[in-house]
Image 1 (tube, helix red, strand yellow):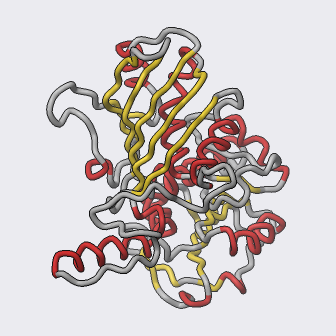
Image 2: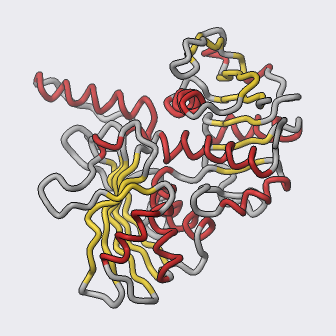
Image 3: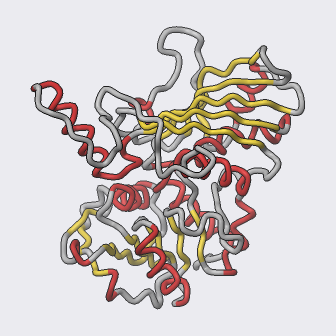
Length: 341
């Protein structure tokens, strides 16, 4: 016996990926609904590679009564309006937007990191999915924190344009083509040219000079992993279609050698260690696309600080950074709370 599942925002990049992953992982489903805005009502979308086509329903008229789980990939605006309605109807919401992440009554979950926190979902019947860059980072940090207690993390991200949605991907493609044929490039989605460039600016600027994306990484890491960990982030948009990369510098309370860290990461859930000290012995965004794992490479000791390590972390941001983590939350929810059959 399976669940009745709704995917809200089913026509977007993340919504489509949710449908794909639900099918790939053979999530136990009795009935599935694709829901989107009125613009997409009636359009058809494939349920993964099952061959089954789903006709999109209008979110404005959708009744969540009797549905078990709603995966929201609709952005903060529609989520603010419809997630509480779904939750009130008894449907557990797993939300991919930033709206509920810092709500103390809403658990913020990465199943490999803080699965027990999901038990708090009953306060609002809502579970939050973290920011894409945070999700892959805490998967890498968790086993190391358990081994030697992390004091401080300095992270620089190299985030793909798919993190900005279809418009971001379209802009990179169109600008790249325009440059090759000598046409003028006009930024629309991004603040500056993204093709053949990098932009140290994601989301809005805050009063202290950081961006909201950087603040998210700090605040969410503290909520998910440990409030005592100090985090400093610089988030950069790069001309890559899919796959976020991160350069992490980690300071521990206790000594942790690179070799021991490699051994720990090799066995850690959700992690794939690819760390050969040779040409090509590491993972880049192109190679992580479509994979479930968070890839770790370039693990080495930092001699400039006591108990310091550096590493390289790569993951498919549409998967572990969004859709996969949401489906994993649904799986965890099913095992712990919504058991059927």
